Image (cartoon, rainbow, N blue to C red; front, side, top):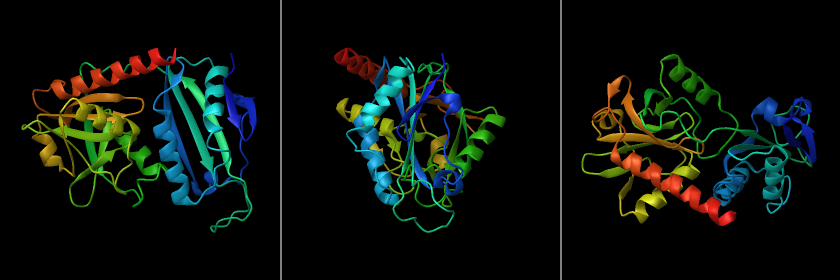
Length: 287
């Protein structure tokens, strides 16, 4: 069965879907995106993603290509047409098609692409944990916008892969961890504080990050939002990462050094359980 994509008002076979060569997303990375998990046929944390999408569009002064109330309908239709039970939806909005000039074009309609694919949401190393490396953060200063200009992230993730790690933690000029190439970074201190960098223009405020903060707070765990150094992470009791597709994933090593006892920690394990229980609850309520 051919995958189906939505491209600017049309549902097309994935292999036939295309955008214009002068789309500003292609020529300038002038666009934003969201990745939304699909669990049991339902979009996960849909509202949070739409709120963040609206913020990204406003920060770049890109208009909505369709009414905000219509976008969920389109995404669900793509999920349905592709028969997705567990997987992801990817949507991208660019400023649109115009002659190549750096300044914003006038009276150009933004372009919208939506795709979906099957993907297991059970990470194979959820029970054993993953390794991360650290790299210099060479990105621009508006990391809070979920823009499609991801080349530094690609280079960081590729370096991690070549070194046998799952993720690369990016480190700013002052030695503080910002975030992973596609995930948010967390540590747990020996005093039991769960630490993650505060939401600012230094990081992308992950939707799963927000969900974990909410769940940890409800469970009366202590959340501290502040920067932490690589050295502090090395001395932490445990570490983990969060993202739309990884959920909560324990980290057992950084730059080849064991974290804690080298096994997934109890905080990360509990938070992953809370998150998966929440997914089950949401799916049950929607059925």
